[in-house]
Image 1 (tube, rainbow, N blue to C red):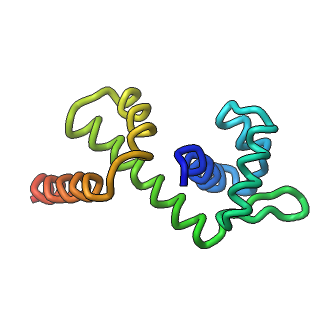
Image 2: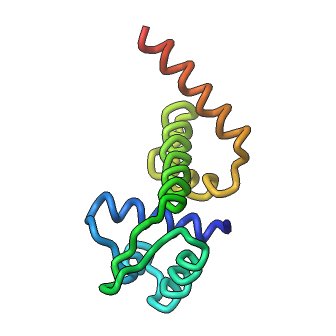
Amino acid sequence: MYESGEMYLETILVLKNRIGNVRSIDIARELDFSKPSVSRAVGILKDDGYIEVDGDGFIELTHDGKIKAESIYERHERLTAFLSEVIGISKETAETDACKIEHIISDETFNSIKKYMKEHENKSNK
């Protein structure tokens, strides 16, 4: 999956949690993208089996779509925390950088960051 597809899935998950029902217009507003661009992406995600769109235009993540979206969102959250809390980057910059890194980071590197944070969290809780 390409970075843009991952970004759409993550956005759908975030919007679903924030507002409940999600339509293409909500995604377009959230990402500040044109409606035709979002419509094309929604079609691709639907064809790839990551989302379903009902007769009223409401978008639901499929099982595979939800797993992928949650994985991307976890990367975003953990990378933001790592950059801001461990390295000391401002929250705003950490958020922006995490959004870029989450799509290209290897599983090995990400899992090492998670392990590092968990070990240091456990040490600080003792």
